[in-house]
Each structure stands twice: as C-alpha cells, then as structure tokens.
Length: 146
Image (tube, rainbow, N blue to C red; front, side, top):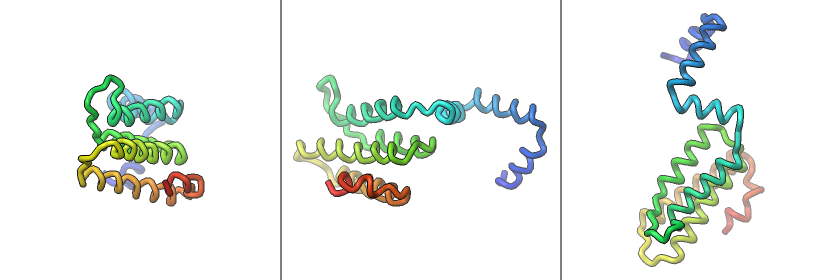
C-alpha cells in the first residue's frame, strides 16, 4: 500500500476505529510497543548505560571469558536508537564510545584482522557523518581527532 493510499484510509476511519487499530498494533508488535514506550517515556540514561555495558562486554567481558568482539552488537544498538529518534548528542556519544572501546581492545592485540579494522573505520566514518549531518560536529571535535 502506498503512503498516499494509507493516508486516505486513515482519514476515512472514525476516531474509535483508529484508536482500536493502534491498540491492536501496540499489542501485536514489539517494535510498536518499544516505539511508543520510548516516545512517551524516553529513559535515555538507562538505555545509554545498558548500551555502553553491552558494547564494552563484547570486548572486555566481566567474567574473564574470551572476548567475542562482535561489532554487530554495537551496530544493531545504534541502528535501533536511530529508528527511535534518540537525541543526536546521546546517539553520537554511543557511536564514539563504540569506536573508542574497539580501539582500546585492538591496542592490546597483535592479531587484529583487516575486516575488524575496516569495520572500525566504517563506524568512524558513520559517526563523523552523523555529527556533521546533525550540525553538532563542534561538540565532538576532540573525539573526532582522537
């Protein structure tokens, strides 16, 4: 269904029918529930702490296990926060934290793969482009130049 047809359909609904459909979507789909929970109660501090913990746990597990160093974990979190429309400064902080943790991890290792290094570079480019697009690059100059 096109966006235009969808708008036409929504406009044709009575208020009660529209409310019923929204409640149905909220109950059926976790993504809708997550979106509305974030929209009405954006507990960003808690989400940031959890995200940073998950990212750091990939490289420095708390229980002395071998680090998994999966870059996909951070990328998934960043993509999720982009969808939620998180405040740009907070999201940029997570992006740079991800890069800084990966750099700290790779400093201690001798056998870092080219794919890992390329992934860090891609994350860096994504973070720099994001702060430029959001017009907040002046707030992150120090972290960009590190």
